Length: 179
Image 1 (tube, rainbow, N blue to C red):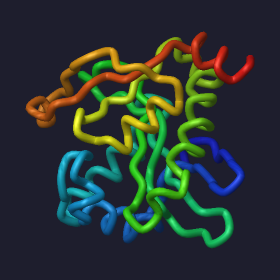
Image 2 (cartoon, one colour; image 1 turned 180 degrees about the vertical axis):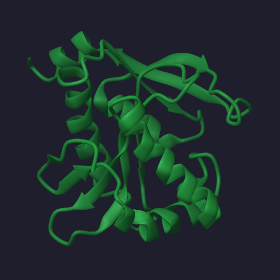
Image 3 (cartoon, one colour; image 1 turned 45 degrees about the vertical axis):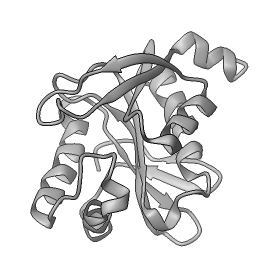
């Protein structure tokens, strides 16, 4: 494993490992889950996406974390810092498997990972690229204190997907957290 392990009240956040693949593949195969996350991926592409996320830890020094329930050990999604080549900024993103949505896990992870991005990675600005129709992610971005900065563009092959860049500065995040 190439990165830290973080703990929240209900979650373990750690870099993806090989044992995550079955849950990762099921996540990427679910049409509702993947509607705003680039579309359904067959197992072979899900494998490549997991390897890209894992490889980001070596190349960039950060990447998405697997979200693991502390009480059961279940893999429930991915969240964390993300900035592949051509990305419009330093992003904290999230995606939760459909069976676990609506329980506050994405918020819990995002708060810990916003702190990680600011305090450990030293990011001065954080964005969330969100499809304008993704009401759940927009609500989470607002709850985190991010504001819509307007339309943005992702690199190919996602360059035709509409996204807005929601975001805030590290100073704004720290102020909201009372630090």
